[in-house]
Image (cartoon, rainbow, N blue to C red; front, side, top):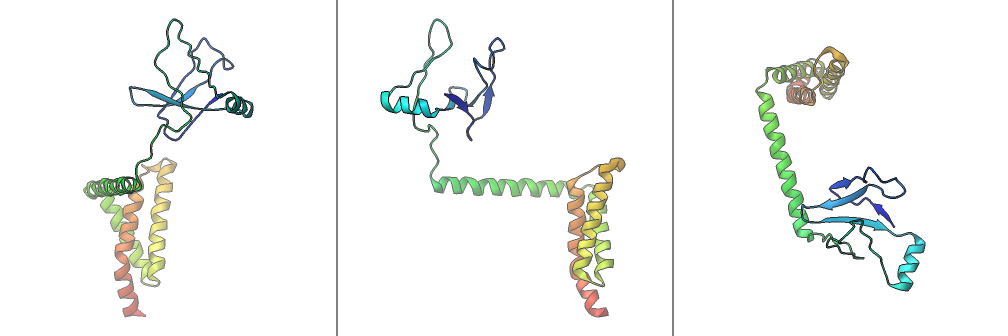
Length: 184
């Protein structure tokens, strides 16, 4: 049988240095500090042998004794009920929103982010007088180009810089529509 990776695995146990790749390979396992669980896949021949003999052999390279082990044909990980999984999902979403909000609140305090907001607002407003939605696109494109320029060694690349430029562009949109409708 060959060890296989599985979604619940938390780490990979490496083979002993004195063993060859033919003797042993790395082993993906789920581990909680009390037990390790690994998954193994039987070849077609091994499946038929198990089917007809009803036996699975377990070998442990430990020498004098054998630690407590178990073998099972059923998946040992029990899925939580659907209601619990949905509740957990929404808890994670709420936590993500809280972290994101806190990150934005902290970023607002930075003068650099306020400059990006103002630049996005001005570009969107000036270009948006003629076509309001195009003004937003142009301002966001300007923010993306600025971050690209920074990535070429001319500054520090930050996703929040682009986000604040975009916020400024969107904040100018109602004013662009108002001025556009007054002029045209």
